[in-house]
Image 1 (cartoon, rainbow, N blue to C red):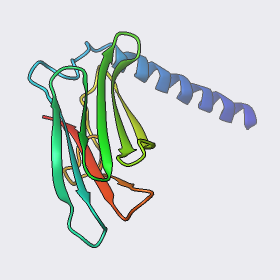
Image 2: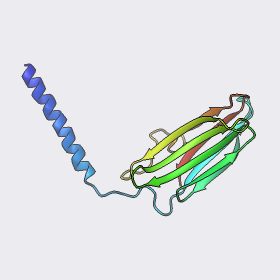
Image 3: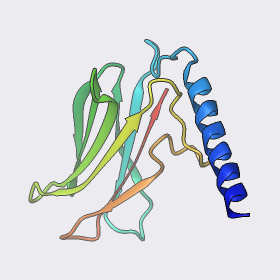
Image 4: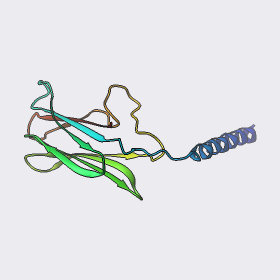
Length: 147
């Protein structure tokens, strides 16, 4: 009985590997065509009891490094396309008063699949992120997507 279970398990495992190999043999689709633009929107508010206001947005159609600054935060986005590390977006949030890094989030992209977020809500591939200032009640919210 135990041998039979081991053979079934091995067969299932090899079957899955075979499917994965067959799937990966499809031609690669570019993640970002020439018309795709990275768009990151940042909103701030002095307190969670106040409605957030759009600070601004960062738009990049090519790899680059851009930032926005408010009274409490500096929001920085680094978009890179490295031959070895692949395509990545890193979002940084710094305290405007101290310059200390408050949050850093890395997003890595598969070159063979389109960028997608499995959740609904229009919050791009990042989802909606919240970062709070350590020296006040201020909050920064951001999302990033590809147009």
